[in-house]
Image 1 (cartoon, rainbow, N blue to C red):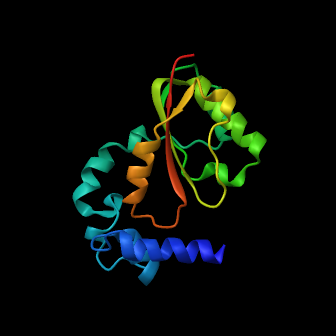
Image 2: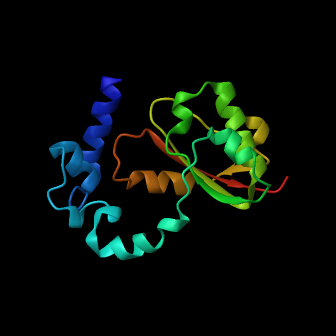
Length: 159
């Protein structure tokens, strides 16, 4: 694991622009020197806009798979799953991909990162979840979060 993270860190320092990269700044310094140049949610210029959207935020304390499955097909059009598959078995990952393939509306997209464990939809779902490989690779190449092994975007197609 150490070699992986050292290699990804080296990539972040050498291949990703560090100027304005608040992720790298925080990783190196343990703080933001200037929050106005940090994450967008911390910038005072965004406060009023975010404050006006606070009623749109709904906290859910349910299992992700169960929550998504409890909504009608087409309720969701996008899912940012971070590296959620990293901590699941192959079977659990396949089931999660299946729920999203079933519940997201056609044209909907899944975005997710792989940290150490490679995860993609199982071959049985290739007709339903189409990888947008070139887009994922292009975005990963300039991703300011240097530590992930890969970034994926899959698009839902009607079966």
